[in-house]
Length: 187
Image (tube, rainbow, N blue to C red; front, side, top):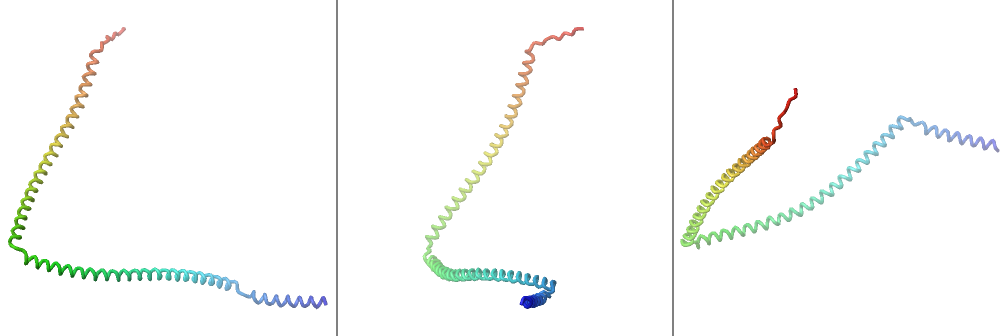
């Protein structure tokens, strides 16, 4: 019995060995290239999924913008229509007022307007004369200011010169006051 069990074990080992050898007959270079290709394809799939997600996000954003722009366009159209109506109404009112003004305007109103215009022109001329006078006065005052500044600068220079001369004179006076000691030479 032991021998039959040993034979059976050996038979099973042989079968397992033959199965393993069949599966191990794969070419290692081909296996490596297939693994690289599978990795490359996986990377491409991930990149495409990422691009798809980005495109979907962009599409959502664009749809939102489109919706907002569409609403704004509708609002702007309504505003344009409202403003167009207002402009038409104001234009009609303006034309009516101009027509009424032409009809109502009298010689007296025209005379008063001319008198006011004459007075305003006279005031304007007077103001212009006063402005010119003020500008001339400013120019004269600026020139006097420049002269005073120059005089001040000159006086400061003279003061500095006089102070130097005074100091030199005092120094000379001090030297003259000091007794001179005769120098004796021993030979």
